[in-house]
Length: 484
Ligand SMILES: [Zn+2]
Image (tube, rainbow, N blue to C red; front, side, top):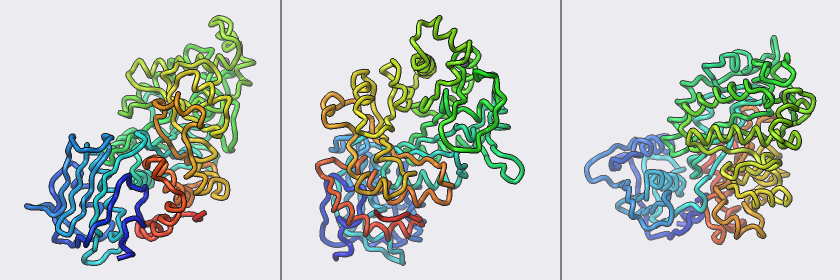
């Protein structure tokens, strides 16, 4: 019985669970009730266990949506495994979907064979945070479509509901914009000859990814990083920079000085044209405009920028950045979407309706104080805990697991302003075939911080569950990195 203890393998840890007597024996004669997620479950079981189930009369596996279900969150579910049946009730479709993920991670299904013993249990579960994300930088290294779908499958397995897709950078522009074809014609490739590197996603491919994610109850949030991180875009359209160029798509890492010029009206027309296509493609509530790491060098020397500063009564180039961010944010708000920016947007006065994604270390008191005072909502992605591109020695499991989205002294005032938590996967030093080894196992710790109530979390318990869970990752074909 011990090897089928449900407490051993489940990550994230459910809020309430109880092991019961006996097993449900799953074999290919079992059937599943019809529901919006039945097709997904049948495919997942087939892939994971090799068993080909179907739908049928009096199904042993019942999937039910019950809006009155007694769980305190829309994404909550109740999973009951008994010797004669498996019943998953979701408060919503996504709740049902999360129940399926837990079923997939119960001990037993990793074993394969003609019949699989799943331990009887009762689980009543719901997430702490409504925004549970993972990010992927597809610019420094290009990731192919199948890889992105697999990534989405894996984040779904850990009950996340946001895929933050970083699509533009100094080193490559990765999203087709029909109005401005040079963005990908020139901006998607860096280097020359044998060293030419790049690629991009057509709008059809992007729709395919969005639909794939939607079927897994995951919202895809695009990031168009402006006004900095723009060298690739400005290599294609140098007229929207301060100097007029020429520029080449960058072939090195680090913070660049090439920005869009907020002194020129044409820059805003150009960027709004891009955002129009982005918002037509992505149905997400949130549109990310980056606005991080903006060097002010060019703006200081640019007559158009200086004129803007004078005529708009701005104090300096930091306020010019605020002017730019607010103007782009208002455009997005005008289209009934919510803008998101990295915490550098707090370096000037910005609209409180912009969501701030905080990446500076969690203990950066100065800028956090600005967030508290300004009234913005928060996505916690602190470099100290959430950056999976950093070596495991630096951001280890214990570190990720210790994440507190808000410093203790601001807890009360920020109570309703924490949207959620997101893990970051930047790819300067991470081509596609190394991503698994950086994301895993740290995503396991992240998922538990996102999902499980703080009072129920315990690192030693988590750490021992990781050990058991590795077998499951093996069956899922995950090439995890060091377990430290
Ligand atoms: Zn300028």
